[in-house]
Length: 96
Image 1 (cartoon, rainbow, N blue to C red):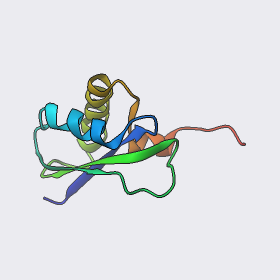
Image 2 (image 1 turned 90 degrees about the vertical axis):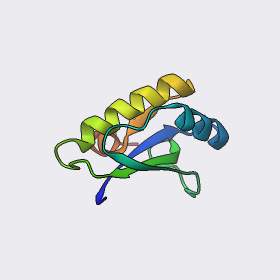
Image 3 (image 1 turned 90 degrees about the horizontal axis):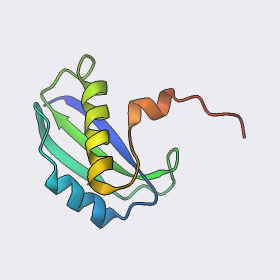
Image 4 (image 1 turned 135 degrees about the vertical axis):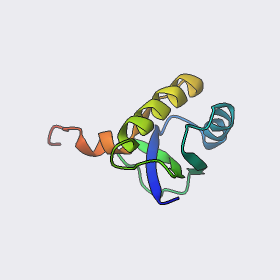
């Protein structure tokens, strides 16, 4: 169980709503544990809640697609944007 990916949820979502949405979604194949972390002290790209998925999937080959699919399903269930953390890191933001 060494593989790990994260999905970040927009700060407009409430932690209890995220937990409820996560509990309604099916666990993706290869994922054995899903944790909702709402203890982030600062926002990360406009997100303050992380949903961490860990398991036996191939993190390099399957991780990005698994996180994107879970983010899409979570966003639909929650009614708030959710993003694969990998994609947030790769997004080009204009300088402030």
